Length: 165
Image 1 (cartoon, rainbow, N blue to C red):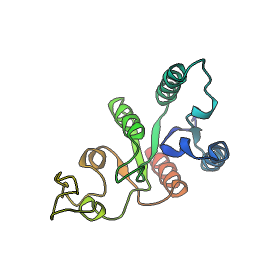
Image 2: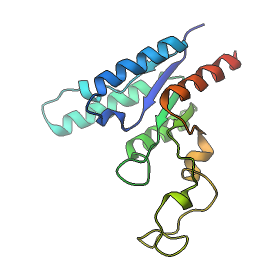
Image 3: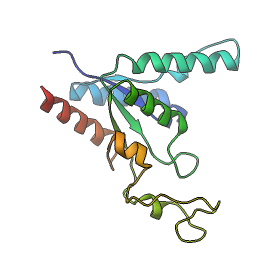
Image 4: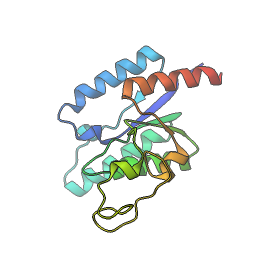
């Protein structure tokens, strides 16, 4: 049987040491019998910023397509929510029928994560959903949320996959 292919979604592509991080991900996956499909944002070239942006989109979509599963880093990114590109990739994968695991999921529910102005509302006056979930209900309903790091999440994926055979 072929090894399951895992698309690695997340804001990790913005890390200063992303190339080294990708190498670690590939080692962890290999040790677990998984194949890491890591975005190559750091490898894409183009003549203009618009061309590079378009190519990154195309490359990442092309990596999601053959993936068996998606593993996504949903840590807070530039605020109190996950990276919007990661959330897009999750939605795309779910729409394509792929199972998604989200790691770095907070342990507290949203109501306790977001600073409140008046009770139940953020500082901008927007209602904070109170379903007892650590992420937006659309992510929680579509994905397996893991309140642990990437390596632990990959171990869960490998165990789940082994149980599916």
